[in-house]
Amino acid sequence: MIDKSEASFVQSLCMGQILEELIVPFPEVRKAEKETLEQVLAAVDQLLAGREKEFREWDVKGEMPAAFLEELRSFGLFGLIVPEEFGGMGFGTMAYSRVLQQIARHDGSVALTVGAHSSIGMRGLLLFGTDEQKRRWLPKLATGEMIAAFCLTEPGAGSDAAAVRTTAVRDGNDWILNGEKLWITNGGIAQFYTVFAKTPAPGDGGKAQMTAFVVTSDLPGVSHGPHEDKMGIRASNTTTVRFEDVRLSGDHVLGGVGKGFKAAMKILNSGRTGLGGGCVGGMKALLGLSTKQAKERKQFGRPISDFGLIKQKVGQMTVDAYAAESVVTMVSGLIDQGYQDYAVEAAISKVFATEALWRGADEALQIAGGNGYMREYPYEKVVRDARINRIFEGTNDILRLFIALSAVNRAAAQLKDVASSMKGVLHDPIKGFGVLSDYALKQASIRTGLVGEKRGFTLLHPALKSHAEQFEEQSREVAWAADRLLRRHGKAIVDKQFALRRLADILVDLFVLAATLSRVHAAVEAKGEAGAAQELEIVRVLSRDVRSRVRGNLRRIDVNEDETVKSVADAAFEREGFGWDVL
Image (cartoon, rainbow, N blue to C red; front, top):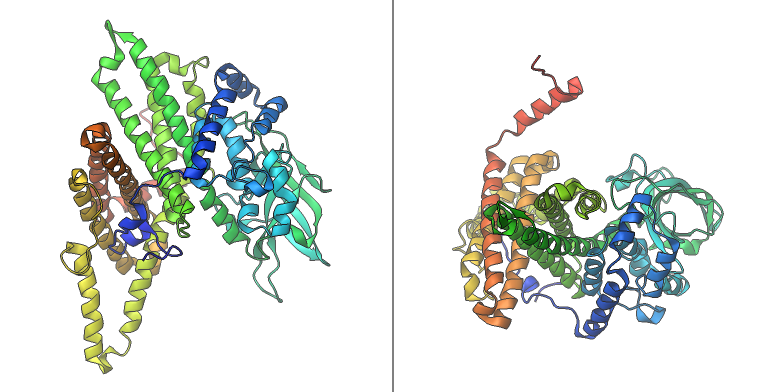
């Protein structure tokens, strides 16, 4: 029986285990939600379809009209995840992500406005709020009377959430909040802010802690700056938010004093499927545009859809979209099923989906040729809108380090256990021999797959056998690589960013492939091999690409030019630029 409080598919890979039961069967939207979800998706299309001209105008102006925000309210799009008892729709993670996907098919700024409200802005209230806090604010958040924003990032404290300088100090039973937050989505239109601030540690001389607070815009001392002039998602509201001697009563503390850092991470982890869903929606929209464009555009007397290089672009875009939807749905399903340790999987879904959308946007513009560069067509706007996804809600660079370090954490604990077991071995050689033998057997099992318990796939359809075997082989390789890195570097592993990135890229590829295998398995079970023929082709392409990338990354963990690259970079830093010229 799998422990839902600790089970993690990706972390288990680094220990040589494949927790197949976590990913098979492929998750489905809850039956109780399906009918309502279909109605909401139809309402989204009714509201947003045919408004491309308006979206472009709002992009140029850098502003979303107040009247349109009122339309979003009237369609209930701010209450998607609010429980029904507080006036919302009560959607689970998968249904919510699917709605964000539908909105993003029409416009990125609209999806971000709705997503920032639900995914992160008020998510802390749902996760950590008291019953009284929920009764006080959720009904207004459900109707959109209050729009929510998430206030963590500060000047000088981007990805380093622990470096925030906003402070909250006690004044009797109240708190006095001071500080400034940067690049806050919905900052200028929000009435409800989830704010993170440093608070004094209990006792004298203790290290300051982070605490989350609910702050409402009507409180004296709360203000925001002008709307930022951004590269993309220009119609979504982004501002600084300032807090000057804002007095907060004790019931504005969210999740407990000193618990803010963990709360922030939990909120971001929980909200990443919304961002992933939005990316999938963008990819599907691009495929619609690109296929139509390629069929209509003629070169050399033929539609360019006839040409192999165009087919390659569209084919890869399709594979990426299918794989991204698979992994985002898988993570959503894990959350809806009550699994608690999904942070690594959620980070993987964010990294893969945002980068797949970026590749798709670039290829779609290329297919459109010169038209793609013109503002009257949608491609250049999609490229600009898509770029931010790899930065916000945790930059993909930081998330890769998080994925790798978190995934090897349990393997590191296992090595520590072995080391502690070896104490006094010379005084009890029989016991010591047993410890070494057990660990040797485990490593042999990981390396060869021939010893110990079965760690492979047993539930997948026979049509997927070759892909499952490839996955099993590469999962053993990555477990062996993780063990080797830990033994070689020990605590210094945290500074080996080149190796960690390669390990993260391997884990991203393997989890995405696992989610896709599960989805295709479900398709074959439901429709037969003939009915699922195209999905079998998709997984064949993905599996081939994963095999190539994983092999390359495994090889370069040991044989690489990392030190040479760092030396070249250090020289560039010293010169503050490029040091050569042909003149």
